[in-house]
Image (tube, rainbow, N blue to C red; front, side, top):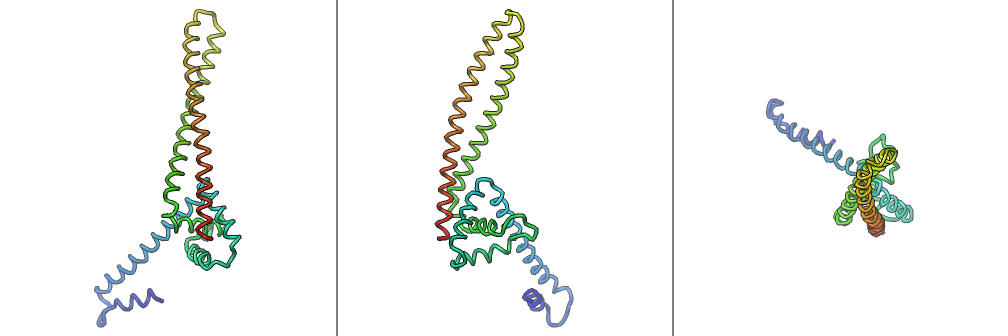
Length: 203
């Protein structure tokens, strides 16, 4: 009804001619902007729910929500606001959308932890890629060594050179594995910080 009243207010008193078009355009533009904002927020919530690391934080929030129940006015308000962004065909429980909305609504509280989490995840992915590349190269070298060992000794010099390369790769793998181990532990600590901070928001 509000949209209809808005359009009627825009009508000129003496005609239904061309002067109505700008008002209709403004109303349609407002509706389009609202729809775009709705879709954008919905996408942000979807990304949060589908992030394997952030999902752990969402589950911590959900557990806290279950502890509090319906006794929190602020939690009821978040739940009511979140319903506007929950699609009809969602495969996720409503609590995940509400928890994601709580994170989204309190982004300023988590921004530093988000950045730290993203940086750690990026470093882990890069190290895993480097490790995989080195392992592939190492396997190729080992296979080549076996081929050469099956032949006579004229290839001994080549074998020794490949052995040196393999040793270098083993050393690099050791360093990267240690860094990867440290970053994975740092990731766990950051996730724990996120869970604790998330719980504190809705207490």
